[in-house]
Amino acid sequence: MQYVIIGAGPAGVTAAENLRKIDPDGVITVVGDEPEMPYSRMAIPYLLVNQIDEHGTFLRKDGEHYKRSGIAIVQGKVVSVNQMGKNVSLQGGTKIDYDKLLIATGSTPLAPPIPGIDLPGVTSCWTLEDARHIARVAKPGSKVVLMGAGFIGCIILEALAKSGADLTVVEMEDRMVPRMMNDIAGTMIKDWCQHNGVNVYTSTKVNSISQDDSSLLVELSTGHKLIADMVVSATGVKPNTSALDTTDVKVEEGVLVDKAMRTSDENIFAAGDVAQAYDFSTGEMSVQAIQPTAVEHGALAAKNMAGQTQATHRGSVNMNVLDTLGLISSSFGLWMGVTGGDSAELLNKERFKYINLQFQDDILVGATSLGLTQHVGVLRGLIQSKIKLGVWKERLMKDPTRIMEAYLGATQAIGFNADVMK
Image (tube, rainbow, N blue to C red; front, side, top):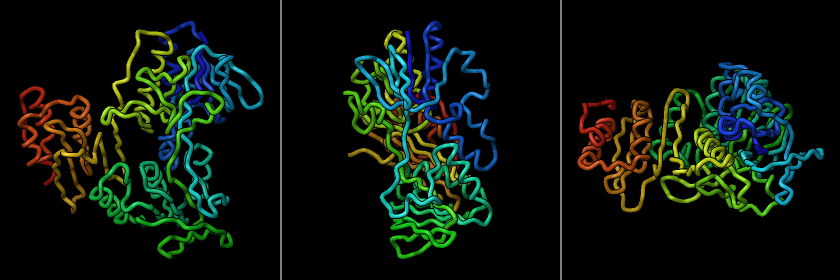
């Protein structure tokens, strides 16, 4: 059996390793379009603050791992997929045959339609090459403007702030991390950043970027003008589906897959940021661009590609955990709530602590927390298990910090007192 995987990120590498475990004799080829060995984009911020070197970003630190595992790593860009001939074509003309194909091509940064977005001093923070460029410029005293304060933007924010650069963040929505945090939590993160020396503009757009002698001039929708040595764009990403442009594989927001991670072509699968897969909370098909989901997808796709007893996807729980200059925030499931549902929240603004729970009947369906870490696993567990809380719902409505007690009480009929907001 010949397996080809397009994409050398967490989804692709996980799939390759699981295929090798299941099929010791299969031919496994992973095609990546960057010159480095497979690495994690989520490790780039740690590289920028010198907590790790470039080797530390690699998904597998042992240089002989892939060779020893019988996994061929091919560096090249796939330009087309031939469904009839069952092969992929690389830039330069090389063709690779497949019996089963996995699309694990991840996402591509979106470039906003702003005059000057293509100037040399403007960069994304998506690849190791981007990180090298940022590291050369982001030094103590340098002026950096970060466009976008979403999940990816805030991960980059951490590294840029720790570099000692004079950092300004510009976010077009009315709060930070708007697709992860409600108004209260998103505003608290902004307050925290400003308290830690980062300038933050919300409800603000970058109108244009221009060259001003050796610097960049960034004009904002508020009328403010910022001088910058570098502008980092983190305004979102889109699934990288271009490899399938020559096929009839169904693509919407991402590559549509069933619960076996199979596309509309029975021999082609998709996993990770590129896959539009089943969402546990909504029951709809959506793209969840987070690394834990990519790893889960890759392992599941491998089982089905290798023809094991069909493994089905239960759906991914929307989960985001973010560290912003030492302030931990998290959101799970339907954190924005459901029609007709109930909610409970507790706020200690001075200590930057906040928790919000969302219920449908007596089932926890979503949660948001700030400044709290001990509840992370329990919140996900309660949402994913859909445990009926019974009397514990009313107790959580009065004091949402009793989440651990509620979990134990609902599952084992035991509990203990907890008070973490005081």
